[in-house]
Length: 196
Image 1 (tube, rainbow, N blue to C red):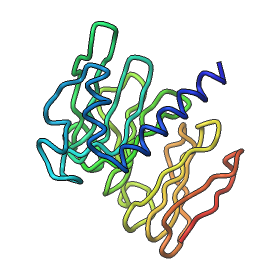
Image 2 (cartoon, rainbow, N blue to C red):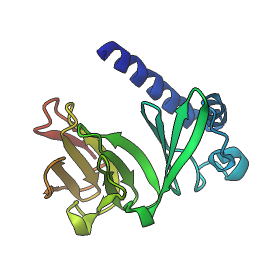
Image 3 (tube, helix red, strand yellow):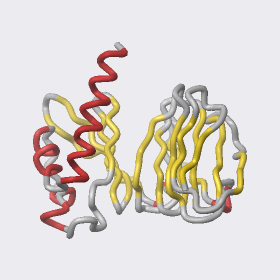
């Protein structure tokens, strides 16, 4: 089982790397899984980096979630084809509609790294719970999010600090910092290193 997960992870990372180097590749990848929504193709509808540019993808079984500049798109992909399920935006609870990265925590919650903060869609929930500087995160521009290896602790980096919490906790712990850009948690998730 671990080997299968590792292979899937490598494939997803390879697709993500190619996506960054060649955004047009998304057209072929999406068509291969049966998604033909014209708004997903940045080279046809938007200039590279435009509002609907696909920035990240999270695959959970038959479920594909796309992080875009207009929110998170959810599709169900089966052998019969792809079916659009839902579009999540600020109205759905995202911290902002410009979503850069998606992660899944140990409880099955989906985390979205947005321009103005992060948001979590807990397993079974209908709306996202946003977190911003006014709701527990360190102030400043949000740059990065990472999880401990067991996906029980989340770390969020902003230009003015680092915030962390266990996924089951309600409160964030904030550590002030200057010009932070990225976070690298220790394997056990008890501490982290930050890049400037």
